[in-house]
Image (cartoon, rainbow, N blue to C red; front, side, top):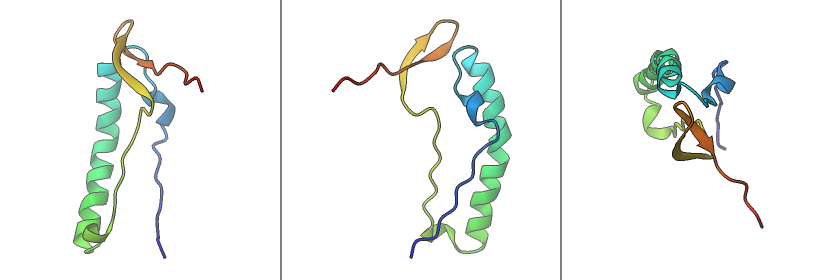
Length: 80
């Protein structure tokens, strides 16, 4: 059996930045930094960290190119 849980930041849609990316992402990162650190410390304290895969993700599908007044461009559509 595989036990799992998912946590999502309530500001999830705000990660999709198309302007002021450094300012916005710095603020959003600061909002989740302590909670994520707390989760990892708690897992370690309980002896669960060695058996736990923690996956953190955001901005799926972004290209590494800057768009407009610094923001990220989305990936072009995939044509089959």
